[in-house]
Length: 543
Figure 1 (spheres, rainbow, N blue to C red):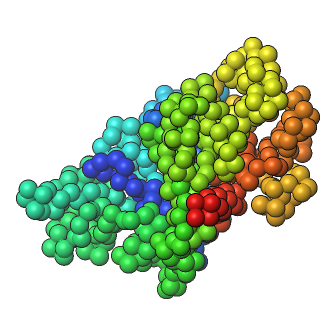
Figure 2 (cartoon, rainbow, N blue to C red):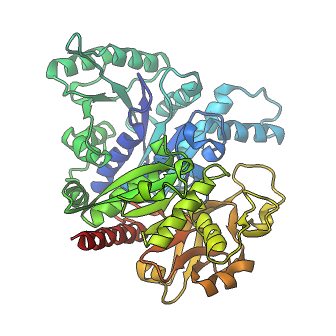
Figure 3 (cartoon, rainbow, N blue to C red):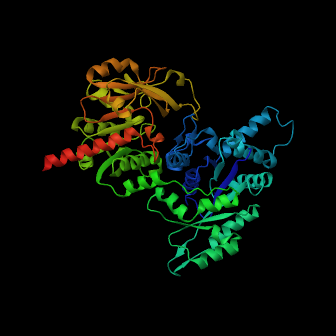
């Protein structure tokens, strides 16, 4: 652990207050002062990882380079910090218990009775400290999922308490995020929910050092004093967190509240460096002052929950800012699409992205959408299942293979243009059995993709089981669908493109997972640019 400092971020009053964004914003400010920072998320649910969770339950499953299926907050961490996360950055109650039970089965506890304290809490602390043992970080921020007071969170709070006792008060800091609601009838901000939330922490033996208070209205000095007095924190450690126009405003707002300075003071870290946020502010300037705008439709089956496509929507924010363009992203439910209504649905759109997903529901709608945009020259971008649907549509309507489909949809398909990987066919467990994490891809010389990336070899993240069936590849290429990128080891096709289309690209991998504020993904940047060109061309025709 060495000289690494540990910051724990908890939440109270209600869920969805934005612990992940506050954690990422604080990390960004500390990083901007020259400190080496990373963030980890501890989730209290019993799933070993989010890999088997329905997106309606938990939003998207974020995948790291090393193949970890993780909480979507890790996406925020990477987008803010521009630093990769790993398996060690996301731990669940399920994994903690799995590790402890595995050790017990091996006899590693020498016959002792296994209990929540000390065995579960010791395993939690071991994972708290794991990243710090590398010596690569000055500060590690740990976000504890859920709300203080939830029964599932109790072992994590106890482990926090023990960590502070073991490492000392100057090496461990507790930040508690709460809500200060405004009652319109009384015309008052109310502090009582925050007082009760802090009391829950105190009962568990943890005194928060800093309170970050979410509010729709500014906190007057008298309210701050009341919170400080009854929650036993210093007045300057009551931090106001007003609702922001965009999540990317939060580091700037926290900088104005001097959150990083309060943290450094509490941890006895001497650092008077002014945070270098010039690039961040330049991004915000482009994002908030666009010179153009485009409308792009996202065709998916989880569109009722925007968090199911969080990384995609944020990648469009990054790409939009890079093009000084406002991207209006419209969600279109795949099940609502038919051949008859495509013109009506897509008439005002400058581009279509067909999103990733699993299962049969909505497949035909995605295929109908792809046929329409292919035939009408509308920019198309397909990701994972979106690429696979593009292959199926092309096989059916261009190659003439009317029964072409994926074996995910029809295991007995006559023309399985998308098929299960051979090494996956005997696997029955769902969790962690897909092609996960970063894989190399060699780009075809002269392809559009090579010009997009500006190089011949790339590495991108995957999360899927099914692949383009190479038995059909030669015939596809004869008809005009090109394998623009191939994995050098397996020969599996990673990217398809149409040469005779303004922009028609599908990727088996998930490029959205590597887009950050300071490094927008080139595929999204060029797709938005293609949509802009489409809009300009249509405007010229109308004029």
